Length: 52
Image (cartoon, rainbow, N blue to C red; front, top):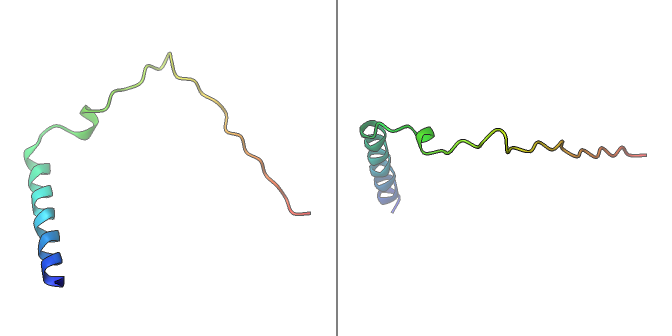
């Protein structure tokens, strides 16, 4: 059973590596950049409590 899991893992890594080499499109090409004019920045609320 361990050998089967190991073989499947190695096989999936080989397929992943081949797809990484063959496809020339980087992951960032699929991301849609947000419009900087519509971004709203809100400060983080940090509540620090100290033991008394």
